[in-house]
Length: 347
Image (cartoon, rainbow, N blue to C red; front, side, top):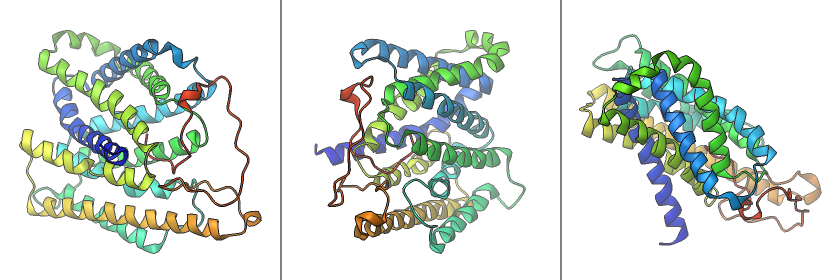
């Protein structure tokens, strides 16, 4: 299989896994307190990551960047999951997956890395379509006050967008090994949820095989595999292509919810789902075109009239000028040095 198709297949698999995570979280929180589910998910993920790190001792010691960057990203990632898991416990899995897709439109508003100037008015029109879609999704069988779960999923979308922007800002130009960064984040999450969940931890003893299967799926597939696979894939493609493929997550969430949980769409929520997908892909296409135009303009400008090209491209092409290469930290594993930089994408 060509490398481009293999990368696309990995990103689609990540989107499928994340789409299915809403139903798994909903099932797990039906038999366990939310904070216990989150602690178990993080603790199992941390054990898996530490095992993988121990098995790869030849990769060298931890770097200061991996720890220093992993700590704040662990906090923001934990914030996403706590709001998202509480939200999924109070709405349908299909609605959760569709509302969280607002992240694709919100992220460019927060991500200023490598882009000069503001976004065009058409982007805000696309965002307006998404907001209308959210209103229809919240309407259910008729217009009424938004459900708690729907509002929490909106909050999770905003926090996730901020997390993505922070990932791009902190990891740009640094050699960060995905496994080490994921390990730090899972350890931070485990520590954060241990105290709040400690009073209810005995409930884990009474969880049956089905409950443990959901927890293991959330930890090993929706956390460890998905985060590692996403980081691996986005280093080998353009940010725009990656976000487009990961943007299929709500489709998988809706499909899983309808097939396995008996979710169904009314005419209003069905229209909301169509508008949500339309608005997110329209907004993503506008942002991609805006970023591409900015890159081309920077390359046409005289070399002395612009700063270094930070936007990246799908092909990895460089201007016909020579820039000194940054020095590599000798403490970091040469085998883990990243490819030519691309636009930061959700990790």
